[in-house]
Length: 498
Ligand code: HEC
Image (cartoon, rainbow, N blue to C red; front, side, top):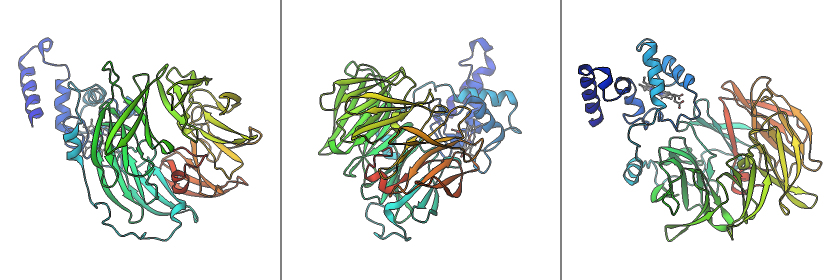
């Protein structure tokens, strides 16, 4: 209400004053926003029934696409078309407006988090038996970003069991509880949703921030940690009911604050590890008696994206300059190696396997068509495998001879490479749907079958035999992005991300 009054005042003043003396060049657009958009996107642009419309939240949407959404609406959603209501100049002005930071930085602290908490089914109140029959360890969740839904798939029969709506724009992979019964989703706008896979019900939700990167669940399943871009916080929740436990402001000793790029669970260490965007530090957070303790590790440069060796003794971080990766010993906090990884590695999707008696890791690159294969004892790059373009995801399974990497960017985005893990050569290149992005593989629990996404509104997941590489079937889906197998995730299978 306060904001509306202020807006009216500005409007009134703007009628009386010459343009050069007006309070703000935005005041007219601000008024349009309050009149036409605020009811769904919030008077402060933090979101409501519709998503948040703030610059950070819109970073993946290009301005012309935003303009198109305003002009034509989004079919089959609540987003109306404004082409008949607003003139073209107003639509352009509104599209400009939502990419500008608000006059005052919005806050999201204890009061807002507590206020947002929803608890449809408190922990332990729903039946202990699943409402369907399937191998609960071989379930997959498929995130369909096209219309913000999630499909639960039976990994034995490769048939959908259930499909349910998610929060707008899920971000970072969903995380399972250690027993595989619950799954936690994080959304771009900061919502954490806890979902009961036995009863097919949302049990708890909370909004941890305004713009969130991802969440992690502690190895013992007791805590959930959220990594935020806005505000600059890590937020700790009790995993049972998503009750707020603590908000950790993210800043260094000099008082400079930072966005959090991502948070990871480190099971053997019983800790969380956080990658910070704006200060050259990595954080390890342990929780004792409900209190988080932060250990700050200074690093030689800004590190964005982390990978861990299987024992969580080392972290490998991608340097922000996109030219190398640093290996840090997590006990001493010291840098032990500097890897030449020139094309901005996507370490978050790295995998490991046994090769000639030693463990190697492999990572695709965002900017070069190459997969780097690294010896994890000597931290040397033993092979740079050329691909048909930059990749996003790499996947395998302990029981499979092959590793899969997509060509996510560039003209060959519809191709995927199959790499023989023992010869380190590409043995096959598939192009399952010409012209459409083919990306992200996830194996079933046995490593016998795998799912590949056709990343399109008129898309599918394709089931392959992991050994013969033959297609078995296509299950239609609306822009399926990630797929998450319960067994592989809760057992930290070597061929998938965590
Ligand atoms: C009746 C509710 C409603 C109103 C009014 C409304 N929107 Fe939306 N808007 C939505 C919903 C819901 C979505 C998400 C649609 C989807 O699922 O793709 C959305 C999506 C958007 C998007 C795309 C966001 C993204 O991250 O992809 C933009 C931009 C947008 N709206 C701007 C506006 C503007 C500007 C106005 C006012 C002129 C407005 N909206 C009015 C409900 C509304």
